[in-house]
Length: 198
Image (tube, rainbow, N blue to C red):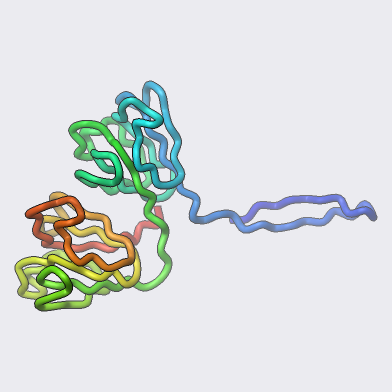
């Protein structure tokens, strides 16, 4: 999709300029009350503290893009992946309290690659993934993933097999200790790429 802009040339000729639209435009609207009621706050990027804009957040509407929302400020606490759609009640996507912060998931167009390690600090058995994994135990015969290196793409890691339970959102980078990301005692059992065009 592109935007057209017509300008009048001094010779009275119409010049048409085509500007590419921003395909990475993302937009989420948070509401204080259920069913999209009360005050609202529109967000198009990361927001470390929703209380700066709303006293609480009990529903939201993702107009475009993908986001991860958190039940604590500064991207801490339980995480929930949100794609385009309407979420009329915060309990429908798992939050018992209120959305406190959110992070935009950038769109990725390319390959996906990550390396998981059995122990912290990139120690123990290691395996490279380029696609989703329903069960790390079944595929690689390791009981846990305690560190990882995200090389390409954005990923979700889950506490239970088949992408269930608590989750972690990880962007490209090195993660020496999964437990330092906010979930002490969490075992990673499955992994999924974020491939949604949202």
